[in-house]
Amino acid sequence: MLRNLSRPLRPVASLCARRAVPAAAATNLSGPFQLAPVRSFGTVETKTALPPASASFQPGTVYGGQHTVTLIPGDGIGLEMANAVKTIFSAANVPVNWEQFDLSGYTKKDEQMLKQAMDSIRRNKVALKGILYTPRSHLGHSSLNVFLRKDLDIYASTSIIENLPGSWPTRHKNVNFAIIRENTEGEYSGLEHTPVPGVVESLKVVTRYKTERIAKYAFDFALKNGRKKVTAIHKANIMKLGDGLFLNTCREVAKRYESSGIQFNDMIVDNASMQLVSKPSQFDVIVCGNLYGNILSNVGAAIVGGPGLVPGANFGANYAVFEPGCRHVGKDIQGRNSANPTALLMSSIHMLRHLGLNNEANRISQALTAVITESKVLTPDLGGSNTTTDFTTAVM
Ligand SMILES: NC(=O)C1=CN([C@@H]2O[C@H](COP(=O)(O)OP(=O)(O)OC[C@H]3O[C@@H](n4cnc5c(N)ncnc54)[C@H](O)[C@@H]3O)[C@@H](O)[C@H]2O)C=CC1
Ligand SMILES: O=C(O)CCC(=O)C(=O)O
Image (cartoon, rainbow, N blue to C red; front, side, top):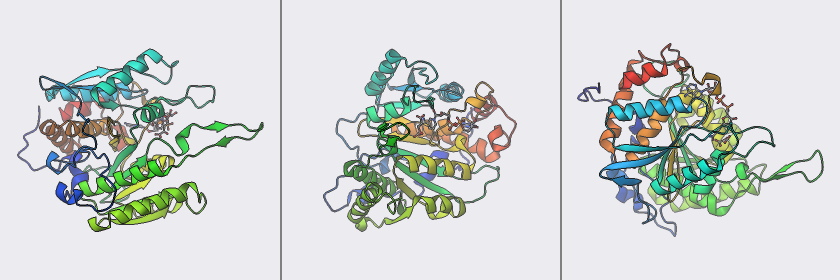
């Protein structure tokens, strides 16, 4: 049963949009930069969304009011999490049809299924995804997750780190920040070689073009969601060229947004890690390169209660792939009916807003918020003893 919504609940998916600004304010920028391709991530109402980046962008395949979305459940707990979302969507009569692809990183790469899945995302433009395993040995295949991001050029990984209104203990209160992470280059270039035996060189690639677009994305995200500060995280004191380029490009972009009132500062990644666990409330929007973003999302997840609570999405000019913002396979708890589906469910709520299905997003968000606020039904990661199924049923 869906809850009576007359009680004013603060929708989980809207918490990052707490200070929304009108779109007009966001577009009133001087300088040669165009607005980066910002989607309606984290907004309660589409009226505050910025215009789509490219005129060709279509939010998914829609026939007779039904949206078709590609679903890749992923390895480990992926199927259990995806089933929770599907069950809740069915109960709420959400007009979404799934095109599901059970890809796995544990088995030999299934080229045919991978191609079908990529074609499906290209057709639908929107996907919901769990996490795929990657072997650690250099003999194993390369990461399917990284392939997907690069091939679709979904360059802006966006994670929302936030204290939810539940009863589990957390070290800090009032944590609410976003991590905007460059998703397609940096340490994940996959370029490694052995010039002589016993020596490996791994290339970290930083380009002005990709840094500029992620920095613009971060500022536009801040504007659209009423956030006040963007912090660039780097290690420019050591990697003077690579991280130096990242920092200087962020500074240039920041200058073009001066009139918008968004503050800008920067921080070295080691200090940022310490500040995140000691004074997380100083952060509003973090912009960073690929690996730092991954590590900081994990630190962020830990301070709010774990990977089961962090939603996320990856945006590019043409595609949006929604997946948990702190990415783990969870092989250790696979098949135990104990994983927390909140991260994937919140990601799917953001997906509904992206599709313009705000009523459905609000209903599910309010139900989820009620269950979390009551904290009577909690999975073991939050100190509870309930199952994934119990939690799903409670939200329904
Ligand atoms: N898609 C991606 O971008 C990423 C993929 N991976 C892949 O995942 C594999 C395993 O990753 P690890 O880093 O070892 O982490 P892991 O999968 O072992 O997860 C870390 C811990 O978080 C817990 N956890 C994760 N999600 C949870 C949930 N929803 N509810 C409750 N507990 C949850 C797990 O049970 C585990 O104890 C890696 O080998 C890699 O291939 C890892 C990082 C990112
Ligand atoms: O694909 C993987 O196995 C790891 C990807 C990863 O670390 C990430 O989220 O960036």
